[in-house]
Length: 130
Image 1 (tube, helix red, strand yellow):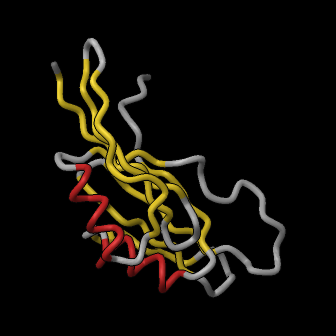
Image 2 (image 1 turned 45 degrees about the horizontal axis):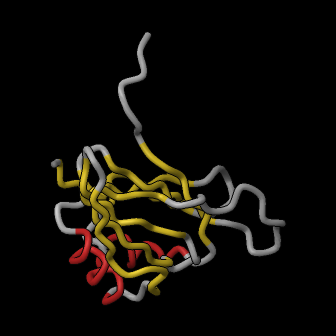
C-alpha cells in the first residue's frame, strides 16, 4: 500500500451557484463529477482545476453550526501566479495579498492570496528553481 498523491480537497460552501461559477467560469475548472448529498436534495460537485487538482464543493446547511468549514488555505500551483491572481480578481475574488516574489537559496517563488466566494483563502504559487 502506498499513498500516491492528493485526490481532492473538500470545501464547505454556503452558495453553490456562486462557488460553482467561480471555480468553473472564473478559474477555468471543469466539473468532473456531481452526485446527490444523501437524501438532502443537494448536490456535491467535484471540480478539476488541473490534472490531479480537484476541489469538492460541499453544500453547507445555513442553519447548521460551522464545523470544519473551509480550509486554512489551498495553494494552487501555477506557471504564472500573478496572472492567476488577476484572473481570480476578475472572477470576483477579493485580494488578500498581491503577488510577491521571494528568492531563497534553493528556490525563488512568487505567490499571491485571494479570498474566494465563501471567504476561503486561495494561494497561487509559482516556483522558479535557482
